[in-house]
Image (cartoon, rainbow, N blue to C red; front, top):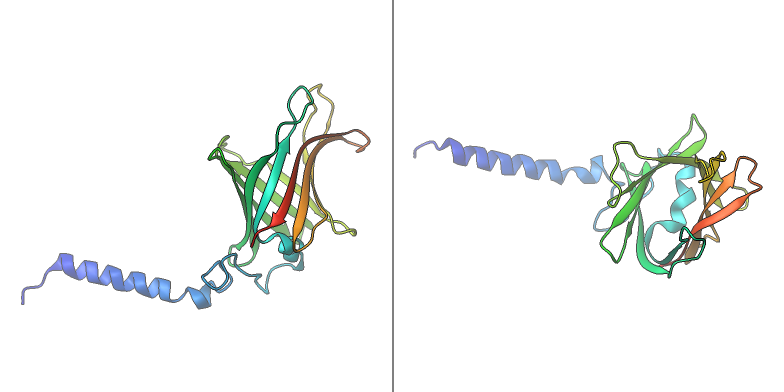
Length: 197
């Protein structure tokens, strides 16, 4: 039988590929899988990884944004999915919208900073540097995140994101511009979600 290098390389490649993907249950046992489609918490993760536990899975949501003239747009139905990534050490969320656009975030808790850092991305506005919010879960169970942002008139302040009324069945989300003292509050976006899975 004549040696055929092409066939040998193909068989070797398939076998190596099979070996690589036969091992993940031990190496990456906290990643999304057939048994756990949204992944699971890695025991080595900071305890704060559970701050978003009630949101993990699919939620059917109504998203409403404010127009530049101050009026509110009609609510838009979106699917908001949360899952554990990086072998259970971080959380990723993504929104699937009726117009075909998508957005999401990578959420990591940094123990040295004692804060969540959330990096946002969107298919409708690709960028070379992802904007980031930071913050924590409060004693009353809300999760509040901030990013420095000036108001249209140039006033210094923050864009504040709040997750609230969180349960295993639902959660609420709001985005607001606030001044540095958080005395001026201007809501710009609200999302109401019910867990689907």
